[in-house]
Length: 493
Image (tube, rainbow, N blue to C red):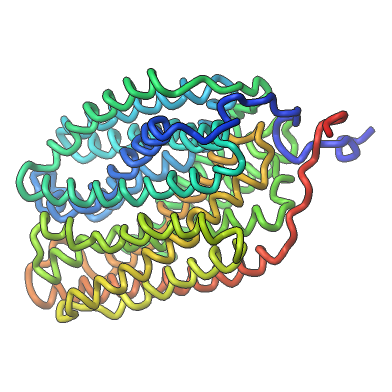
């Protein structure tokens, strides 16, 4: 019988009835939810803090090039994105609690390497290690929330998980600003292992072991192909401005990324147990939610990369004041998810997902009109608009990705959701950073150099904004489709 005629499940591992979960019979204990959300906030704070430190790194003793500054940010998110799905599968197979503790340990090691870095290469390597640790702990936390929460309470728990991302961003902004002005960037990295150790101790005591899925797939070939495709694509975008978009080096990198992505897809179709079975994307809503998740973070991280630089270079803010001034970009992500959890059953996910993305695109377009003479309250208003858009769409998209897969594949769903976030984040930083570098290089020291910086920032944000707005229409169309019933194992009622 030809292979194509063989029946195949919609997910990479055989579906079985999920065993009763006694912990999910009641609401998730608040203390446990706080520990899980604190781990998420720690991983997110590292991203936000580094964006605040870019001007200090650029003018510091390591003398980074513009490319190295981009990689100091993107090394974290590229490794994070490439390893998320296999890390989620590892958590499903060997235990989500073990994955969480291992992630905190690797995260702490990477932060220590960054703190002691003698040069930019070591700093970038440490950031990559932090990304590997975050890849283990982020899907583990989301999977634990799904596994341990009763269905009636799951929406509120997912909203709290999303809220912790906003709180982590706010904490990272404040910590990065204070460290950049008073303590130095090395101190910030040195504190991270201490915080990770405290959270690991709390997690070891409070987080229970959940049912494992021994059939969960850990596909090394697929993992390598996926990570390499993202890495090469980001490299092509970063190298484009100064090497030329039509140079053999850049065109070759784009071609290699396309070949690696095609190889990942072909491998997934042919492998008996692939990392991600392409058939899961037969769900139109799943495709729309994954695309929307990537687009939201594409826009958000493009703003993150230039936001602190604009306030320090163009507005003359100190690092500490900048940490406070960027707070509006997190307020919506902190406050709005609670409203989403309350009103989503009434209005449905489509207006929340598509409308949130539209607000993100509109916010980016409005920020792209700003220059050194723009009043800060107006600028803060545009940041708040974008933040409200994130607060509307992020929990809705997350719930769709997780909900479109069976509970036994919770780790896969968590990894897929967070991988979409980080791929979008990596591309957002690369695109806006590359367009910025095409207009401005180095640290702006004169009014003319500041004007070139803002022109490059505005160009990059407009390109990103138009992409997000176009994607919001695609997501709105995808959410029109009805969710198909999940396949069930034989004999399952």
